[in-house]
Length: 366
Image (cartoon, rainbow, N blue to C red; front, side, top):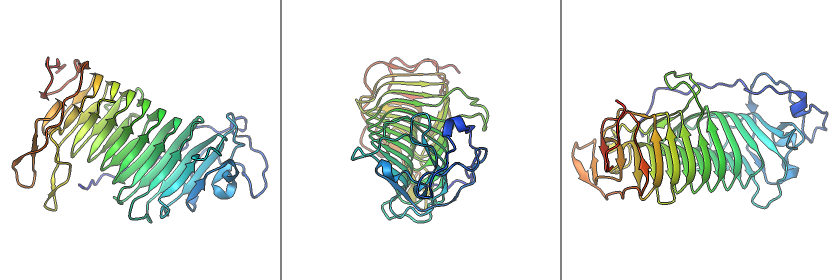
């Protein structure tokens, strides 16, 4: 995978003012929750991997720094640097057996992924969590460890992710699987597979109004190599004010007949195409390298206010054309043709250069 010289800059300032009315600074025994020492800054200290599978696991020795576990005073897990992911996770909260009823938030987790199993690891992994939960101020550099993922949500809901800075992940920056009512804002994700993967999920909101022209404008930026945003068999998804770059494949990929009611508004996207690295193409040999691609029956898609630029194949594609340019040989290869999207594809009102497969051809604003 191509290497980037640009490194993510960690912002460790906690963006929430913590008060006694919110977190309740009570006195606890040494085996239970301890009060939060500093509400204004985030200075993480080393911690072993954390596994929580029931309410009794919410203790100070297991990473909880404040709170009582109620909706108005959730447990706070954070201010930790977790580099040992040899168990396959840094922080895993697993409610598979239904033994977690308490409320919690996660904030200020850092990792350099120094130790992982060969199969890869997830820095933060939530399973079957449905209480209102916020994950914020998370920073990681996976150093291109195999199958590394920043945040994995399995069968969960009502999760907000805010101010995540995840770099050099070989898997996904964020993967949302079989989940719903998920929000992702003000995050920068660099991953080889996808910045954000939305799979078999629904009611997902990515982004909020921001300054797209500024690097510090508060926008989501999902980049690196594979796909900026990958939406597979998911519905009721809104992506707004987001900068996506699929340097090897596709900026935004909408895939599968189960993908519908997707609205893309006011963003910047590109798909620059694979490069030749160490004698091999760095990306996937596919026929839809572009800024935005709609394939395999994805339908009822609306896109407007986007700028599509720097695309090696087409700016936007409805299905693939069966061609892949091998950057190592310079030859165009025949590959399996990707099926087009379905009905109700509204792509007018975007600034783009070229298109493939749309009829009628969308109007361009530039």
